[in-house]
Amino acid sequence: MLFDIKTMMVILPISSVLIAMLLMLTGAHRSTKSLRAWTLSLLAQGAGWAIAHINGKTLSDDLLLGSIALSLFASGWTLRCTALCRFAGLRPWRRTLIVLSLAPLPCAAIFPSDSVSRVACADIVYGTLALSCAFLLWRTADFGARSLRRGVLVLFTSLGIVLLLRAGELFMRQPLGSPLAFRTALEQLAFLGSYLTTVGASFGFVLMHRTRMEEELHLLATTDPLTGLLNRRSFILRAHHELTQRHHHPLALLMLDLDHFKQINDLHGHPTGDEVLCDFVRTMKSCLRKIDLVARFGGEEFVILLANTDTDAALIIAERIRCAVAARQMERLDLRYTVSIGIASTEQLTIGSADTIDALLAHADVALYRAKQQGRNRCEVAAVLL
Image (cartoon, rainbow, N blue to C red; front, side, top):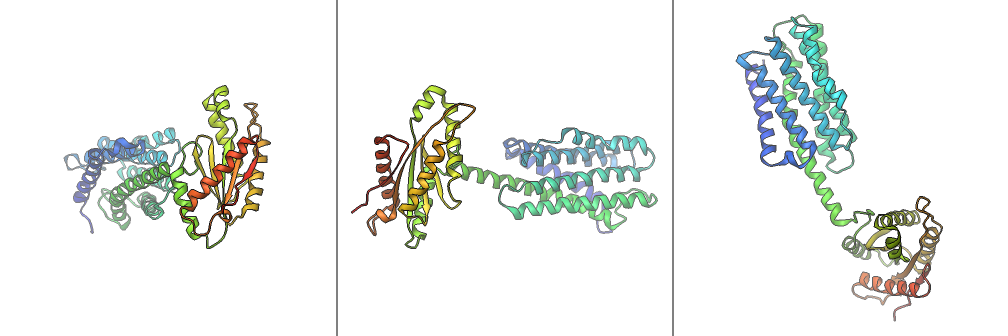
């Protein structure tokens, strides 16, 4: 015997409750609904083990207390599934999870005098829920820390398989006393896996939240929330990097401004103006390559940095964007709009000039102003700097 049952039945509830208390003391359980559900799952699991151990009894000794404990374990697993559903951005499977959390109760009615079969039925529920947790983690692939996610996924998958195998073993053999007496390797693995999953998956889940929050903060700091494009600061940093890596290849910069956008806001309202901006971004990006840097500089003004593009090629791309926008009609709003574009390139700048991006922006801004002055809905190339 590798483990002592009484020791393990003390360690498991203590571990669950301590981790839950740690989450509550740090306020993590209030930060997101998924962490709140995870904290409740730990408390349910801890309560289940505490009830199972009342007066030194195990799950097989008392029908009522054993059934309540098994249902609390199932509730803990369903809350973990709920937490992972919320983390994955999915709607929780409420009805299915409620049914699974109550499944041990009818098992007690079916096998009132057969504790082994009751625990085997419960293991089927737990194993199914553990594999469901693994599936939800597999679906959550929209953020970094892949190795961390894989580690937690392996814990759930391994425990789910062990629990299902243990259920099969319990159904096939004759009752040999309490099924919690660690008489087989699978029973040993089931308890060890439960402990490792309680501790490892809990800390892993918290770290996954931290990683996602860091990525969301980074996204907020570097992108425009309405259009999803780079913001001004992030664009300038990326553009400086592109300049240092260009190795004498030409770069071009387009500055774009929607014509009469203020009138659109005044006549149709700001929500409509936001729809126009998003429609413009989709149209503009359909004319560009993936390597091109696009940013919203503010209001209705946008900039594009075109890698390995000379002035003539930049003019072709600018005309493509202008024509695509002019041909657009927002059918739901019965609205058309146009764009004016100023073009500048590194070919037009003095060799070795400092702050090249600032120079390109200033040069393109002058060209854009000229396009506005000459009637809008047109592209203008900046004059060559001498």
